[in-house]
Image (cartoon, rainbow, N blue to C red; front, side):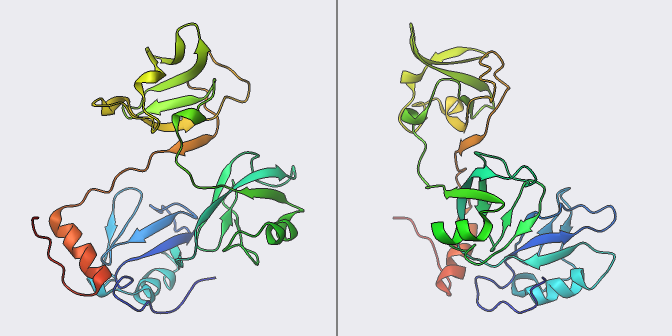
Length: 260
């Protein structure tokens, strides 16, 4: 279904999200991937910027849809409505179903997307309700709600893989003769890390990703990764002028940032 309506209000004019639902020949986009339209410009996976259709910051999805979706030679997109987003974890699934036990899936825009890119939408998908979810897809798979919480050092288990800000991978070993350590290209003590998995004054060693144990419990190969359990959110960096522009959109009037 392609949504065909105007977006109203300062925050949405020229800025909205779309999902690719059909690929053109030699497309620079990815099927089912969500793209952000900012100030009337969409950027493809190869870095090409497309804005010939738009009216800049005042662009609407209706204009966007007319340009892309009414041309059979273009990739097609649908509007991603800003609906509540949350994550669920698959606990059971039928063999014929394209889900993975233990894997987390994000519900965004009213859809649950499986491992092969198929979109599932059913009553109750926009909110978590144990009974609704079990009744809706119990014949296909079962899920549990993933509670959003900060991953801490106490959550680490032997065999987990961690990745530092530098991109190096290490295996976690708890309770060794030397204490709790991580081992990979080098080894180090976990007591250097704070509960938030950062190292004071050595940000290059901060842990930014945590993976579960390898399915075969193979500790010798650090590159044998399990399921991604945690990924540190990258801080948003903005210039003063960019921050002023974003705040002006939210407040609906011009905002100036001054020194304290």
